[in-house]
Image 1 (cartoon, rainbow, N blue to C red):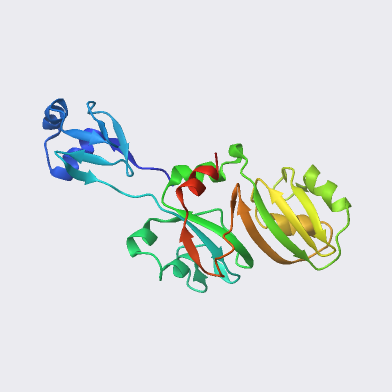
Image 2 (cartoon, rainbow, N blue to C red):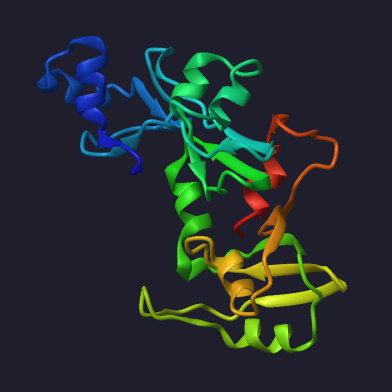
Length: 240
């Protein structure tokens, strides 16, 4: 989902029904500010989050939204679904409809996986989190049906070849917590990747819970289905 950009003169013309030729004069008269800075170039690019003021009147002041959700099992990471409750349904009681309509999901979890889900209307931020080149780690708590052994650690670290897609997974870090529990950190999110990797050992995953993305950990005060806005430091630190 790309950020929408437009020339400043087009935004002013469209928002105030002013002939675009007149916009040049308006800028020359020093009547327009973008993000608090005097605007002088009619071809300056602005996006939907640029704060634009003309003659002390706000033409555009859209807000960015960053939300963390503790997703329960049985909820789908989708905006609409005919069969299951969605993450948007969980947010409906807490956030205004205009906020909900603007959101997209950053790094989905499947129906039977719980934990940290992020939602935003800022695609530049979400692209930095999901782009493979930025190598943002996702950490999961995994409960297995059978006991774990040290050879799991080496296998995850080497990566595993999946012939159906003809790909080898990137190295993942596995830490054995107990006989039946592990923590896994990876920088990609292929289809059912963790379950399939443990499947190589014929060890079914009983429970899967994501507790962090990058430096951001799931707020322990959030019960299943609860959410909150991220604060400024969380937004800036997660993919710095």
